[in-house]
Image 1 (tube, one colour):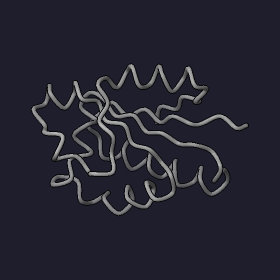
Image 2: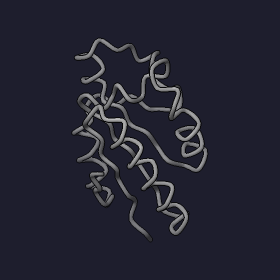
Image 3: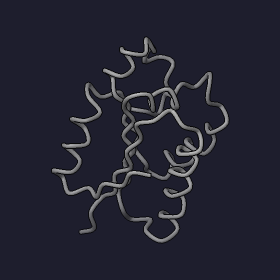
Length: 114
């Protein structure tokens, strides 16, 4: 069984976000059967606020429909005073982004930091 792939985002950077999404799309062209997860913590959670990031909404929805899971750190949301309701509705809020990374790596996910 192939291992899943974990993309970690921790910066509020449009160009890194764009790079990560491009990496995921390119990866899926060759490895459609692998599980893919994206974990956002720290300032990167701001990239998933629907009202301020419509630029990437269609790309995110398309990836979600292809099975990519998006995990958003609840602690970072609280720190930046962002309501869970402001996040794209296909994202899963987790208590801790770092804890989610550890769990996924324990499940055998391969870590990638764009």
